[in-house]
Image (cartoon, rainbow, N blue to C red; front, side, top):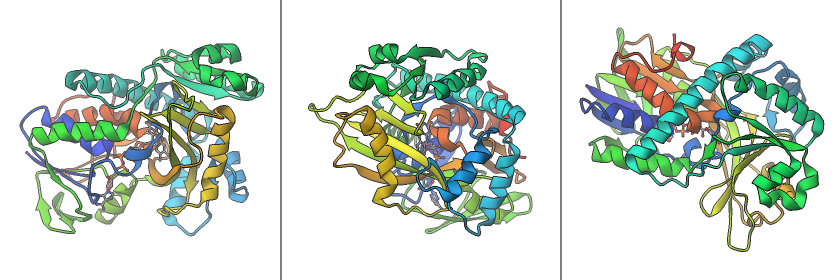
Length: 415
Ligand SMILES: Cc1cc2nc3c(=O)[nH]c(=O)nc-3n(C[C@H](O)[C@H](O)[C@H](O)COP(=O)(O)OP(=O)(O)OC[C@H]3O[C@@H](n4cnc5c(N)ncnc54)[C@H](O)[C@@H]3O)c2cc1C
């Protein structure tokens, strides 16, 4: 079968990789960027975090969103504007902000994250990949005792699903992560997930792309997808900045940009671009960086050692496709990390990025066929796309092959 994959982020590339396994397909990947993994897949927090697979939509979130409208220093930020996609998405999101849906969505997310981590480890072992992987777990750090107590309560939902999580007091946190020794009195404790891990998703994606190339996948880079052309119940071709390309099957994995191509073809999926801020700080031998990735749960800032650098990410901003940023957008997150790791990295030379999380209201992606018989979507992995990538890709390739996926795919169906 001739398959065209739109998007060369971690989702598109892992999907291409899984589809090469059968040796039966002629696969082309199209991306507007000059290289693979240049967007969200390049600068995320690097965490493989099944131990943190909670749905964003929960009963406490509407109040947080409301506050974010008039406060500028919040991790959640809304820029009020006339934007039909945003209001529609928000209405669907708010509908999920109840206890039952929060639990159901968390269970579905966690199932996919756990499965995906197994697939990731399998792919890494099969190919002996080096991608700055750290397998020492992740820390979910709580500064305030009351928030810590709630965090412990909240984590029971994942523990009930078999997730290995342990509660550490401040001394135990320092035993595990000596870099926090000098600031031991600044936090109450942490929830530690020993099986969570981290790794450079851009490096991983590029290594996988090299394997795809060896397996004869064609890469059409620096080529923008303009539209899908429909013909009855099928997509006849994709129009790009350079050509009209036909295929037996089209897979859409354009991250937060997927709806821009799907909607004109009549497929209105609620995937919203939720802007995140990411900075990469240099670490030299004079610094005392952490050994494991951590989420500062009070400030909602994640920081992870990635090679000779410290990646710091934060903020969920609802502002459409506006990628702009100011220096002051990064200051609260950098202050939070510097407060915990005063000598963790070179704070005076950050490299700044913004990128979009392709968020769905439920937090689960869309993986499946659409109303067009030869159009498949694998997109909307939101704030956990690196964690979910290898599992999503395997589910996609199983469905395309007409096989039943190893985990229940019903929460991810497009219809
Ligand atoms: C700040 C931040 C921190 C994060 N931290 C984590 C984390 O720690 N762990 C985790 O699991 N996940 C994390 N994520 C989420 C994760 O990075 C994303 O879910 C994932 O990278 C999405 O991958 P993707 O391939 O769908 O999209 P992308 O990586 O955005 O790729 C989409 C591709 O589509 C291409 N494209 C778009 N439009 C067009 C067009 N018209 N024509 C051609 N090409 C096009 C782009 O060039 C891009 O290459 C984070 C995200 C952010 C923003």
